[in-house]
Image (cartoon, rainbow, N blue to C red):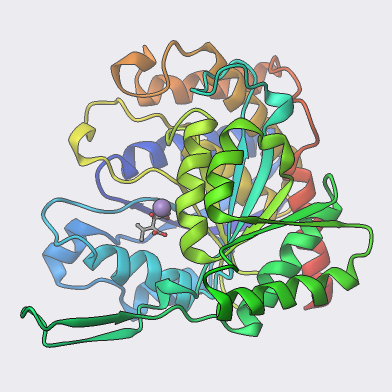
Length: 378
Ligand code: IPM
Ligand code: MN
């Protein structure tokens, strides 16, 4: 029986609540699909920081690096200055684990309410490939005369050929398993330096994948097209900051932050990929059982597909989608069930195998193929 070593970072707020549900779904999936996991909890987050003064420790990095995948809940707390945990933990992990890609599916599941009138699941099935370690997130720049009316702040965006090329290459690999279209989302008319590098990467990489169609959209136009004509997009590749912004928009279109999942992928095998729901720690509702665990469950599915457990991943995705369709609302009291109640229902649906198939191909299977191709290359 295959065994996988997982590191688990439950984090703060609703993070531990949704992570506990994801782990119980994992227990059920192991039994049903015949694999096992060893789990090591890594206590990172606000409480840990306030108790110990540590953000990331060497010990934590070691545990994370030596594991096969990381399951991440959410971190953040009103007790810690905004930005400290984000930079010191989330962004530090994405960098130190060389998680080149932030993979964010935008998929509307059947029966899930979307604020976009008339939108159907058939029309909304894209994957956003967000470059995950560079751009404005590098945080370089300077301030002089801080705190005076003469203050001058510069904030740079770092774009390396190495970082951009590997994100674009991943997008093409994924598109090859899907509807064979990659759209670059950028702002090349204004950000002319970075834009030229991204366009050149599209041209060069595109030559390696002649069967994949290329398209381009400015990020402002993307915000218009994504909600009303998502069928234009199959795989979208974009820079770190644009990707941050458009994936929140994508999350709303697919039913809200409670539904959206993500994978921070290390694609060269040099460290570990990390999977997290897109929502934050939501301290205002922590402890109430109001958080929707679907984002965490779908992130678990992404995790399992990259570990080669495609069947389990697809079953979790289908069961989660089916339960989302049953809920009267997607978060808070409107969900009509507690966080753990939703988790139990997902498990029951998965075990009874009563979840209907989903329209379109399974992203979970596509990812497993891409991952295998990357392993061969490495
Ligand atoms: C996300 C978040 C993070 C980001 C924050 C918490 C640093 O918004 O994962 O999208 O900006 O990447
Ligand atoms: Mn974000």
